[in-house]
Image 1 (cartoon, rainbow, N blue to C red):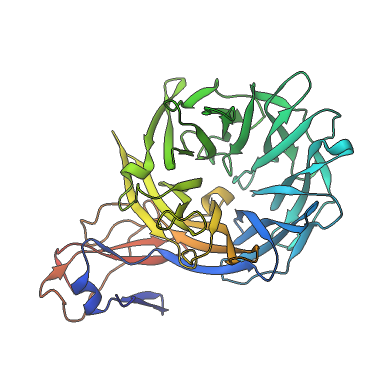
Image 2 (image 1 turned 30 degrees about the vertical axis):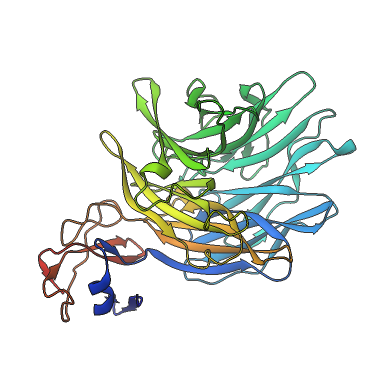
Length: 478
């Protein structure tokens, strides 16, 4: 099919859909909601495991790992404005220290991003290092410091960090990590002050043999607390979750999110929430599963389903894994890697947008293929952040992923895409944009390829580009 063309001029967005596309389509027909794809870090290097966050000043911050050598990995950042300008590369660590598994989040009040990574200390025991970065100045505003100090005999690994989108209050980041000690292990959390760098003592989220913790990219705007999820054990693993309040205390008991039937395991969780509800996504049996955490009195109800089996357009016959999830004012957006024709080396990136309905999940968008992420190479390890989680507005989400751009060489690049999720069924001529904003005016012209009429729907707005969706025959002439 010929693609639609988009032009923005004089405050109006024009989308031209070729008659051949409309005539050959199976309805509903969606004009792809991917706004753009671009390279963040490229060249003949090994660069992988990216993360991304948003700052309300209009800046995305991308962080990734660079394999300088087998025993020395570095961490870099690069910003991109909402206008599309890429900043200079900024090193978080280019010393001989071996920084791995970086993550970042934004504090809106102080316009600071905390970058964390695991690094080895004496005799190789791991601890967590951090650095403060200004997305506005595109510069580091602190030296490297210990988020989790070195302790002989302890490994502190796989750190993730949650930020704060509130503009006038909220001074702290929440860092979670997996800790292995002589006498105890489990998932722990530490609070880090955005300006003083003061770090609290570690507090146990969940004891036992737990791994791969994930924390929501930001606490909620109205209810400032984070959701944490993790993998319980390596064999026959389950998924647990818990709430952390803004002061670091725990807002709920441990929640049992997933207990797969033998012999399956639930692994690689990610979580996004607004302080009152959350979606945990995880890999199970080669599919993407999800658990919606919603308030039920003073506790949280868990509703878990196989997202792959229910997502419109999804292919249950392909392997899907390494999921990530983001949240905006209206919905959750999740992304994942998917095999192509059951290949172990050809992976693509897919997106979907889902809302919790009265009795079931409702998909606003399913199985969206990300441009520049469907080559014969492996595109993997996606990470998501929305404008909302950085204190911004609108339904735009930023996606980062790594790309084996030259199969056989081992080189990887960091690529990214911007995605606007939409909501509502294709049933009315216009719908409110960005969760309740005034809808735009839609004018249709041209000759109908179907000798009939179509229903049009616009979404986006509030600073984001609009999307035009063409649905089944309706009441608006085309």
